[in-house]
Amino acid sequence: MTDLLTALEVHRATFTALRHELHANPETAYEEDRTSALIAHELESYGLEVHRGLAHTGVVAVLRNGTSRRTIGLRADIDALNITELNELPYRSTTQGKMHACGHDGHTAMLLLAARHLSQTRNIDGTVVFIFQPAEEGGAGARTMIRDGLFERFPVDAVYGMHNIPGIPAGQFAVMPGPMMAAGDYFEIVINAVGGHAALPHTTPDPILAGSALVQALQSVVSRTIDPLDPAVLSVTQFHGGEASNVIPATVRLHGTARSYTSSAQEALEAGLRRLADGTAASYGVEIDVQYRRGYPATINTPREAAFARDVLADLVGQQQVLTQLKPLMTAEDFSFMLQARPGAYLWIGNGDTAGLHTPRYNFNDAILTLGAACWVGLAESAL
Image 1 (tube, rainbow, N blue to C red):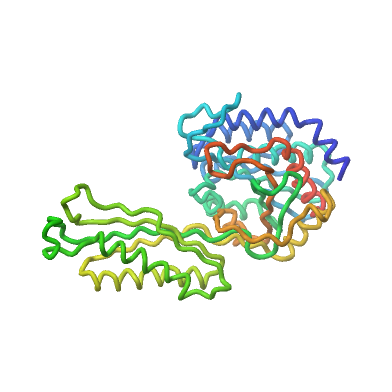
Image 2 (image 1 turned 180 degrees about the horizontal axis):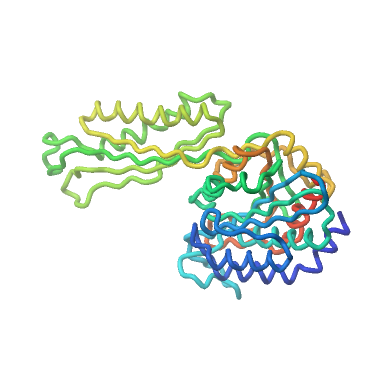
């Protein structure tokens, strides 16, 4: 693998510049038109078969070589976030209120470098499908690509995704069988009463009081209805109600999120929330409406593909640099939809000691760009 890294290092400056261009021009879910055009242009310049339009701004490129029918899919996400960048960089975001605060610019550059290398060396017997997916950040772009016929048009034996993780040292990877990231569900709770004068509380039910009680009660859902060995989180993150100090409001709105790794925990979270909402409504004489939206499912690596990725990574950086005992994250990832459709694995690559994901001072670590590309090449060449 040393020769591979050396060959990729020759192109570090070119793809670092490409990454910086993406960083300076962030685009969010389903609006990645400029990003998509740049990706397609690059892939076409490598001589690959390029397809556009899946999930509106998605790009798929195909590399075929030899006679084998084996096929591997490699996926990178391409969208940015609605965050105002605070970094003072020569290539900082030029779009107010948007930035690549999750490193998808780096993910795109890594996969493009791998596509360039593989298109030149063609050290494979089979097919590589390069998937550049939009709208990971809340837009479920993976699900949209699948609904648009991704795996029917470009069937793969297995599919792999990768994400940088601040806090894991640069040069290290992580991959485990089973859960890597959680399911992410969202809820909105509307509490309706009549409203009235704060000096006459006996004349109207109080949605503030009911909402406060419900927030407290919801903390029992995880601790008392879910197996303590089955991780889950339920968080109320917004509480809105009232406009004046002397008025009991007519309406209160609560928002929050629920996270879990198993379908049983996911079902228990929703059922527990609805049960407590009904009980609170009856206890406080208010009406409560619950809107519960299932978000991304849990990201679950299949054992065979996780073991395969672990072995490829061990050949690349050494067994000690491949972490296999980390705890899954409670954040969610829409690559989970691809893992529901095909076997595969989601990998983490260390971003080093950087600001956290989804923060205004985050920046992808350019030092890991060629290492991430080498991971993609290693997976493709080993599989095919």
